[in-house]
Amino acid sequence: MATHRLLLLPGDGIGPDIMAEAVKVLDWINANGTDRFETEEDLVGGAAYDAHGQSISDATMKIALDADAVLFGAVGGPKWDGVGYDVRPEAGLLRLRKDLQLFANLRPAICYPALADSSSLKRDVVEGLDILIIRELTGGVYFGEPKEIIDIGNGQKRGIDTQVYDTFEIERIARVAFELARTRGNKVTSSEKRNVMKSGVLWNEVVTALGARDYSDVALDHMLADACGMQLVRWPKQFDVILCDNLFGDMLSDVAAMLTGSLGMLPSASLGAPDATSGKRKALYEPVHGSAPDIAGTGAANPIAMIASLAMCLRYSFNMVDLADRLDAAIAAALDKGLRTADIMSDGLTQVGTTEMGSAIVAELDAASRA
Ligand code: IPM
Ligand code: MG
Image (cartoon, rainbow, N blue to C red):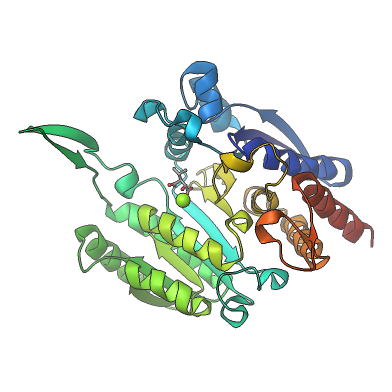
């Protein structure tokens, strides 16, 4: 029996609430599956700051580097609004992404049929929606230097962030987008602002050249990032894979999330390059939503994005495709039964809390596996 080592980083706010539901799924897999998952839990974000004044400790980073995969909840909250920039909760997540070199962020936006009416857009616009956003995650304005606030005299300051991309960074993320497009709708829409930004000009050139050289079988088009945001809410079903940089990907994926009914529905995978000898990738899986401190501990959080992130972990880190499919189907089945957390509730359906939703998904998984 294969054994896999997972680091669980629940983080802040609703992070621990939803992580507990992912753990229920892992317990079920350990009791019923072909593989075994060993887990270790540690602190990140504000919780880590409170414990040792850093948003992630070196010791935790070491465990993350050694683990087969990391499951991450959420970080941040008003409690830490006043802490230094370098130790703010989000810095823990950014360090994980950077130090594990998780350059490829996969954010699938799927509209479950049962949720088509929860979207702020009309049913026919979102029903059957299946988009994959590929966001570059270790470069661009998130990490570019200089990044600072400097004094320029006369009581004036200057805030500087640097948007910077090298050819290899664009090429490796574009390759991920093309490869994944081949497994689905075979279409990539590359999004940048080449009309204003030099990095956008280079992005466009590199993606175009790579497409022509290695992926001429994949349809490629280019869309300015602002237009892409507009098209996402106008007619999202025109998209298959959207390829974008770190900042545009952050924005476009929140937009895409709302199309699916709730931010509480969107999982993500952050992957590194395959290791030259073992072929294994470093990986972190997290819901796209944040820590929602206002509902933390109330039992109202939607655990679906977290559980769907675990499904992505099974799929991308352990090639357990069948189980991942069954877990995704179990989520859809719980929704089909009319179970809804508060964020996706609508008239005539059954409102449940975090733990009920998690248990219902495990029950569906269990029932389908025995059928
Ligand atoms: C996301 C989040 C993060 C980001 C924050 C928490 C740093 O918004 O994963 O989309 O900006 O990347
Ligand atoms: Mg974001």
